[in-house]
Figure 1 (cartoon, helix red, strand yellow):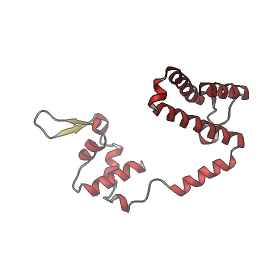
Figure 2 (cartoon, helix red, strand yellow):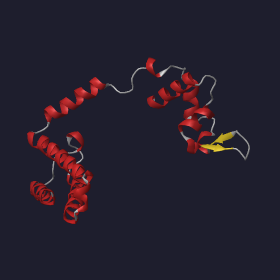
Figure 3 (tube, helix red, strand yellow):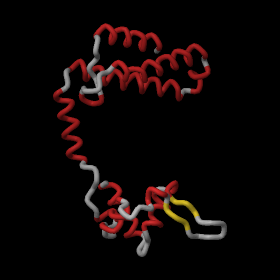
Figure 4 (spheres, one colour):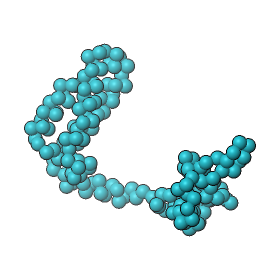
Length: 169
């Protein structure tokens, strides 16, 4: 909701005298239904037509403030501290798995961007297999681990999965 209010505030500052209709037509074009042929008027979609619409309340509640004068929506320091804390509290094996996974993804991307490698059938098939294995890794990871899931349910599954990825490369 903060982001929406910020966007509305910036829009009002950049477009004095604008209305919610103008903002919705710019911000969410699917919620703007143009009028008939030759008409520049239009109407808001059904979800915006209710008098107790949240967007209407937000629009009326914000003041025009340029973006450079608004408080930032993303707190870089707080997010950096949180990330460092997550890294400090992770088990070394989990950090290695995260880094290894990133390395394989970067290698797959580099190989797929190489025109010569992608034209060799054996390389292309191994690359497709590696890409499949890397993307399916999310099914192997648990969701409650730091940084999006680094704990594996079964160490044997982990070793097998790693062997398959290495073979594909």
